[in-house]
Amino acid sequence: MRVFGVDIGGTGIKGAPVDTEDGTLVAPRFRIPTPQPAEPEAVARTVAQVAEHFGWTGPVGATFPAVIRAGVAHTAANVDESWVGSDVSAVLGGALGPALGGTEVAVVNDADAAGIAEMAFGAGRDTAGLVVMTTFGTGIGTALFLHGQLIPNTELGHLEIHGHDAETKTSDAAREREDLSWEKWAKRVNRYLGALEALLWPDLIIVGGGASKKADRFFDHLELRTKVVPAQLQNEAGIVGAAMFAAGEQIRPRPAPRPARRRGPATRPPGGRRP
Image (cartoon, rainbow, N blue to C red):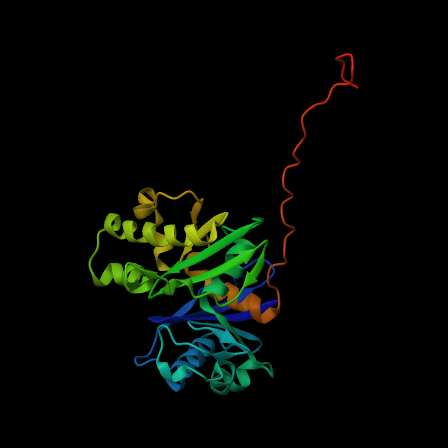
């Protein structure tokens, strides 16, 4: 199935048609800078421009940097606060109009979308247990998966670390803003991931977002008990996950791994021989 995926971020809005069967982009993605201020009407117009670039008509899925319930935004992490309480699906649908082909825009939290894509086609594929997806970009997004089942809207990028909202000091934007070396930034990332590790004891941590393209510059400085891997779909994960969400093709729950059976002490019958 082909679905149009749109990834709405704090600095850019990008999209492309997606083959949801294999998670590939049918055409190279197209990106337009996010309007500033990122108010509803301006963002919706930009989303429409991205879709028009492909002459798209059909189902559309979109990520959004907020807690999303039934298409409604309940927070506004890296977009204008006027989005809070708005029906994101309706706002985007009004701008896209005929391009939707009679369908509604399916809206999902941005980190959740990236996680859906990575669990289906990327670094989390075939992984049972607890997986934490993190995205380091304008902010820090997180997505939790237990045996393949998404636990939506976790927002763990806002944990308090040393008296600060984590994303204000540890996002990729913070690295650029403070002109940190990769090694210094890695220490902050390690501290943040260590806090997640201490709270959740996950089986796998996936590092995505814009920083995933530069994993070779900071991964060697991470020291955690948990296995940490870079996202494989990188900046395409949000587009792919949004399309999958719209198509209803989210990953299926995987059975929990069975604990190893413990054997009791061997017993001997009278006479000293095993039965």
